[in-house]
Amino acid sequence: MKKIEFSHRGVLIIIGFFSLLICLGTIAIGVMIYLDPKYAESYYFYKVYLVYRHLWKYLSNVSPWPLFFFWLLAELLLVGILIRAWAIRTHRNTIRILGVLLIFAHISWFYLSWGFNYSRKNVRSRLGLYGKVEHKEFLEEFRDVAKEIRQLAALRPEKLPNVSEMQLNDQLEHELCQFLESLGLPSIHGVRCRIVQPSGCLLIFETAGIFWPFSGEGQVDKGLHWIEWPFTMAHELAHGMGWTNEGECNFLAFECCIHSSDPWIRYSAAISYWKYLASSLQDEDSLTYVELQRLAGDTVLKDLADIREQHRIYPSILPEWRDWLYERYLEVNKVEAGLHSYHELIPLVILYRKK
Image (cartoon, rainbow, N blue to C red):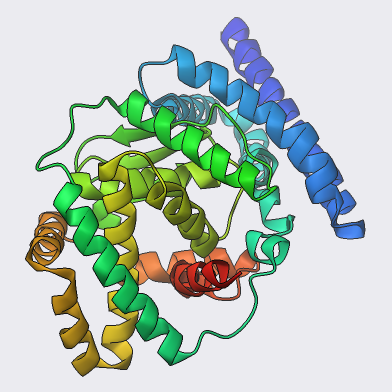
């Protein structure tokens, strides 16, 4: 009995030690960035985040399964250890203290493994993409994209191309890195995004994809329509390369994909951008929206209908709670536009094309 108790005490001490270490390391970097925001780039990104990325790159290459599953297994194991230790009454005060420490350790780990990228200079400011987009410019963009997407629809594959997840990931990663480097922005090679099952596991939360900092990989729901895969994967890869703003990741994904050599990838970018344009116009001017929708052509309209139908297979659960939680998360990380930041794709593209 004493031997078992000593074993539990030893495990708890080790867990507590590493949790405290993570918290202290995060506090130290946080203070540095608070005193001088430049440290977010010069120290955190280049000397901490890139180290994480090299680790995740190695683990992703050797693992045939998403690293998220290993993270989940580790979390379940940790919970099991705490529950078992709780059964020993003499450990309960230790467990209470350790539980609080673990909460702070998880928050700290989030910032240490990715979250401090929110403090870096964003894409908009680096490229000087400021200015107001007039309604007239918006309508011109809509008409131009209608012509472009109609042409791309004629070239798109009729069904899901015979391309592996890894091949698609590698092509998108290569083209995204090329685009970032052409802008003089930092890029990271070896980022991984996986298509995960079961289908609908993310879509039921109205989420097509997610970048999970704790495992260092992006995930895209397999239930997503195959036309949407490339753009969504490119968006999550942009997150993995250290870019945080949702609208800016949409912008990077769009510009990377629309100039791809692959018709499927180009069409995925165009139809995703079209959806954002259409959504904005429908809210502002429904009559013009109906008129301009026809310009895209029957193939595009049918694909959009198929995409909507595919999403209906996985009805969202607790959408209000999901939006509320994500809005609070974005507010905490000083994303002023909140959920609307996704729609910043439109002005960013228009302003970028005007440069």
